[in-house]
Image (cartoon, rainbow, N blue to C red):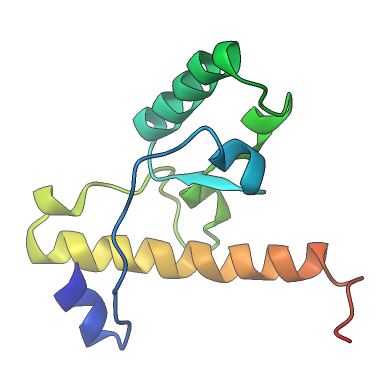
Length: 116
């Protein structure tokens, strides 16, 4: 993925980390790449909500990344490892599409905020 993204001028320098209960408090949006990932996130929320106070509407924060796609019809981001080199390109195409719309959405939601 790093090599494929670097060819597009995107340097991937971060790594993933496990989801934490505090994420449901700290973040406005939690993005899942596929339905299984989304179900796992929602299951974790259910387990954790019995042990600690989490926002009641936190489940609404969990969205599928592809729900932001405009150009692509896929509903899930596939695992690139099973698609060979083209699998990584496909994932990057989907993510670029979704990120553009996601950014537009965030900017529209916050258009009332002005820089000081």
